Image 1 (cartoon, rainbow, N blue to C red):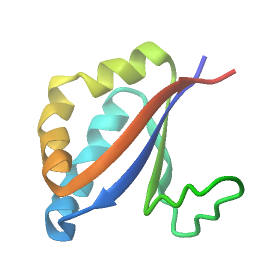
Image 2: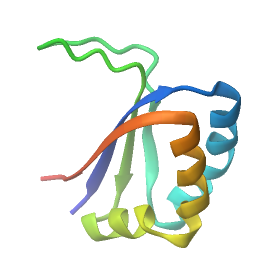
Image 3: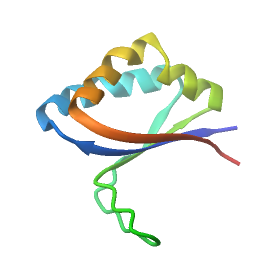
Image 4: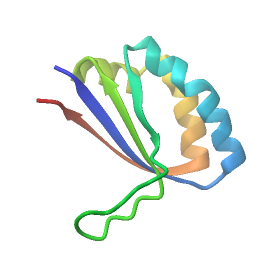
Length: 96
């Protein structure tokens, strides 16, 4: 069953974040994942007051594979870059 990582990202260092963007896609693909949304230029709040500055949606073949990617050695370096250059909220959800 597919699983999704949904992230709300506020970039605090655009130049540094570009470094993250250059390297992260290869790590996602290595674990069978793919980007479905890359930032979401058009974001419209339908309910509540949620106004995320940027949304990322990743799809993986399974919950286990998504966790393997997130905790992987390959993603360790890019994750450190993201932590330095952005503030992120993220959740992992299994599809139905």
